[in-house]
Image (cartoon, rainbow, N blue to C red; front, side):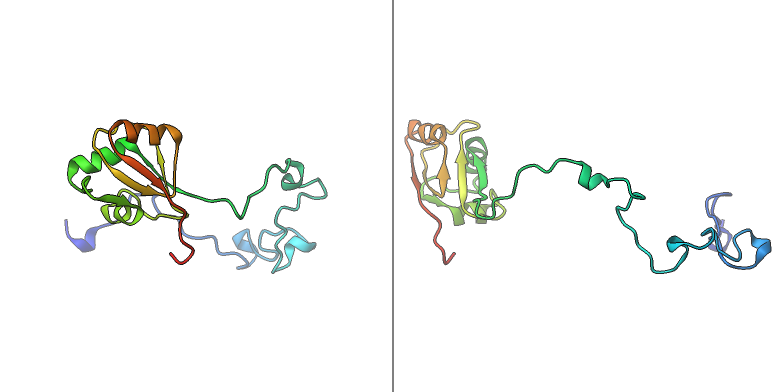
Length: 157
């Protein structure tokens, strides 16, 4: 077999329909658009119009709203934090701040701050400085001999 002998399988490709090429083509004259009316003209877009029937987007109920002032935190769990400490990506001896978590790769971007949650187990003694933490997470860190400082994110950061 040579490169010039390569061919698609029979029926794999189909030539495009050439519209408006005479009466013998089957799609001549009006080009498959029927006769007259708005839809037979060019430049017509009637999106979501259902022929006078109430459109779907108006029939469905509207619910809730998006709070533009809501805080969106990057979330870390105690189990993942311990995994990164065991792997040597985070030094448990020094204070662990949000910037340390970002540099280690545990948090991709800090958003409105990092929030600590209690999923998993923490065995290392750590000093954490984060924007938020659940009560269970704070208790788990203190049980391991560490401490959690909850600090508000500075506006300049």
